[in-house]
Amino acid sequence: RGKVKEQLNLTSQAQSDLERSIKLLPTADAYNSLGNLATKAGRLAEAKDYYAKVANNQSELGKQAYRALLDLDLKDNPAKYVNVRIGQNSQGEIVAQITNPTPQNIHQITLIVQYKDATGRTQQIKHNLKGTVTAGKQHLFDLGLTGKLTPEQFKTLQAGITGAQVAR
Image (tube, rainbow, N blue to C red; front, side):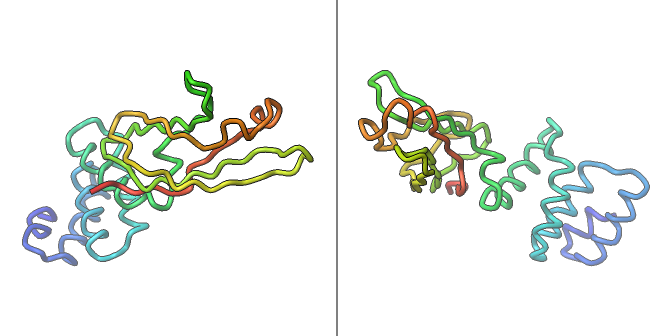
């Protein structure tokens, strides 16, 4: 009944029916619908919680909930979805390897790189990476640090993802 009311745009009645439904028998379908209703109402934290309950399910509904969760949560928690490794490529350039294990293309990635300078102070550089990392793929980005760091400084190099968006 909650699903039918959702389709008829009777949102408060759908919400009530679906909440009652999950008390009796929690289902991925009900949680996903509650996530949809919360998203439409602008209750994004609540929507994330509902979608997260479904997102680990390998069904089509689970994949749909994961995509919805990614759309809502990537901006706030990019490191949860996008991975970064620092290293050198075959030409010896210092690069960031960005891996996107999600089902969505990701762009507008912001990377913070830190290293210890010659005096032992931590230096931080913010990189706004250009380009898109395709769903399920990885991409190398030149950090422009080749020849600027000593081997000791290179060993202290760390990076973290602080921003990213789903590419539309």
